Image (cartoon, rainbow, N blue to C red; front, side, top):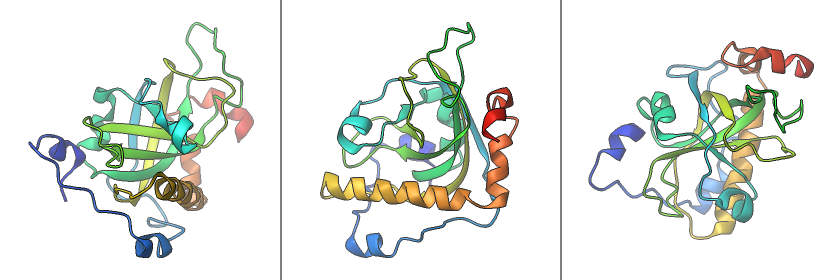
Length: 201
């Protein structure tokens, strides 16, 4: 299976498979081995950029986009699809952060790597949804993420409602999959700023 970076070099990308009723009803609620396996964990880091603005408004799933150069560690070794792990938005270095203490802890996340076939994007993106309700936006803040496993392939959809339904399942699968000892310990990985996470341990 070609990596996301390899697909990005093709003159035309293969069409994403269409989501089906059978796929929806047979989805597992936990994915991955009992401990992360190669190529995981994959470390990502970079400043949060504004995306297309659709996640929060249309899908109820606001996402944080990383710059193109920040996604090479995953696009070069992994195929397109939906992944799970942990992410942390870091407080600003000048100390003038608008984020509260709870916002800068390490939280579970789901990430879409690909072109979002439903919206026919032209650019490969890594869009991370942190499963936490932030009190303010965090564009421009640095974010660290640790990708620990793969959930499902990138799919196309016949309706926005079907896409939203799958996103909600993705979130549940991510939380279930992270709720295992060999995954939970990555919340305290040195990739994160552990001084921000003391209160959440």
